[in-house]
Length: 297
Image 1 (cartoon, rainbow, N blue to C red):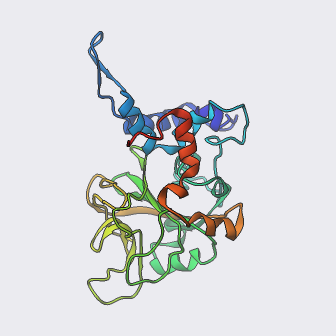
Image 2: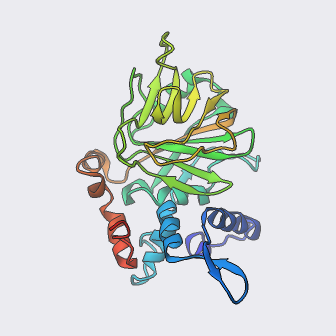
Image 3: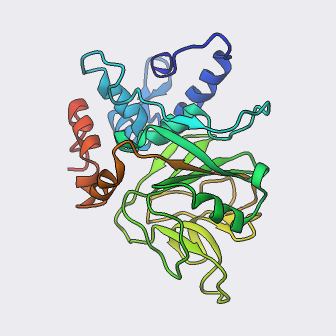
């Protein structure tokens, strides 16, 4: 699967990178079925359905195996990451493998160019600089956080980051984990507390910073305006757990990537219309192909 998605390059180490990604997949999986012959556990069908829902990129790839060979088929598209060159191995935090995992939850026209708009090591830990930099981009953004514990996670913001005193956004937004395991957490419909962007408010009931899901002071993911602290809690908005090892987090690196839509403004407008199921018709088609679309029935 990885060789098909990421063709080998002579100047690129393969084994360690592939092992890291495989570990992410396995860390996300549950093995609950007892295998009596060897005393070990395997993946049940329910485990597999749950695993596919958390890793839509893997699900799309498996579904693509049922289609005629085509390099442009679903599951094989990897976003093109645009950023300055660096000798730092950890720059950027968003590797192409991570981008592929996130892209599994997006539509085809959002899998083109992803441009690095903000990086804390380059631009400084500054909320104002962050907001200034992202004004140069159009369309959705991907927020990536690597905290001082080594956990990597973030959120996809379907709407621009702009000053508000309350939650806003639409049902395309989602949270994700990238390390030490990989999972996508889409809106459950429990509430509409999707995005949060408060700037220069003086009330404790309106905390300044960026957030996704949950409720005020108890977000699914929140980064304070100082950009040096935040928190992540279990969140009914996205059905997500705490994304780090602890609820209180200290970001080490913050990145923001702008997504350039291939289809233009009209496709972005159409994407936010309709019900949650309407917005994920592409995924439902793939689920039907592998026979798990009606798993909740």
